[in-house]
Length: 100
Image (tube, rainbow, N blue to C red):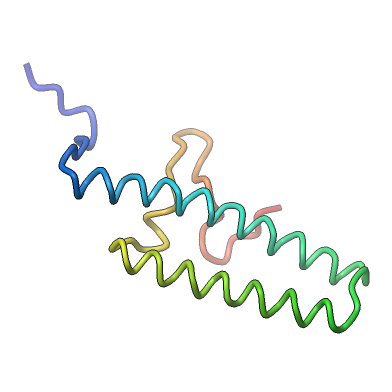
C-alpha cells in the first residue's frame, strides 16, 4: 500500500537540527514582523521621539540582518520559514502583501 500523502519526515540528526532551527526561526520571524508593524504604527501615530525612532530603526535593521545570517547558517531561505497552514493560507505574509 502506497501512503504518499505528503513530504516524509527526515529523522536524521542533520534533518532534526534543520527542522528545529526552521521552527524556532519561524517563530522569531513572526515576532520580528509583528514588532516591525507595531513600530510603524507607533511612528505613524507620532508616539516616538526622533531618538527613539532612530534606535528602533537600527534595532530592527540589525535583527533582520541577524535573521538572514541564521537562515544562511542552517541553509534556509525566507520562504522556508513561511509555513503553509492549509486553508488558512501561509503563516507569514507573502513578499509585498499587506498583512492587514
